Image 1 (cartoon, rainbow, N blue to C red):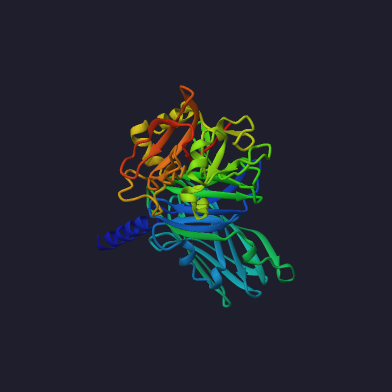
Image 2 (spheres, rainbow, N blue to C red):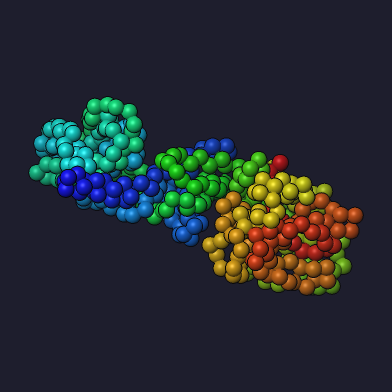
Length: 417
């Protein structure tokens, strides 16, 4: 009875430790199938890491599996882990020697063993047939010793088997550093992850995920660039694809300049398209983008990148309806891991990846105001002298709909055609 209790306790500890382990790999589709790099942000814990395109993200509630490997230089790799059906084991034989491979279940029972004479070099094995559970894999010789935990989610009944499927000898050795790295990141069930995929220096796509399993994240790369060669991050939200940042262009689609107006009188009197920085400070450009009057939207030369347009009042309504209505949509759209929004930043989760910032506005007489509030134009006018816009506040999770004069300066997000 005592032995049974100890084994159950050990299983419980291991289950808690590894229950949330998932591995996320990455692929691209659309305008590019290549993923150059990924920025991973945990929006619940407000942490982030950067990966190379071929890396594998290992989400773990405790120490990563890589940290449990006893081999020097992390020289044994197992993927996928957790596994379903089969996994691949990679390791280095540092010399020609007799090698023993053993697999033990959580009770310490050895369920397979094999001995092979291995040449110096890189070796790959395929492990199959183990039932659901937690196992220890040991690879030992008189020259090296590797140990790692393996988690199996396989519900099928089978016979444990490990096969040698590849060997690369010393003269043509393949360094493990050329294999995709497995990068650990702390994670708790329910955390919201924001993946930004980069490709070709011009494509940037977001993928939002609350992970529940090992899977591949596929970025849909879509061109979104303006005549100033600003390349915008985009994100799919429901049936719509939105820019995930405000536009910054100084030119219309055909390359003609959009007037920059600084003084209050010039701004107030203008009836042509114009832009400015908040508070006439160029340092606000990178974070917030540019403020534009509505005439820049109405201009036939088109302010939006090719394939994109300024959203209509109805398209804004489509977005807020998809997110559960105007009374809750703001929280799902507001950035939550920066200090730009004042406390309490009510309801903010940014679970859509929209990443709304509180950039303020410029009114019809040129005065800048409300840097702690976010304002965005729609392309829909109201009785020819006004146009609809949307507002988000730090102390509310609403998205408010209102209208203002055409020579106000607000920010612009675009939606894909």
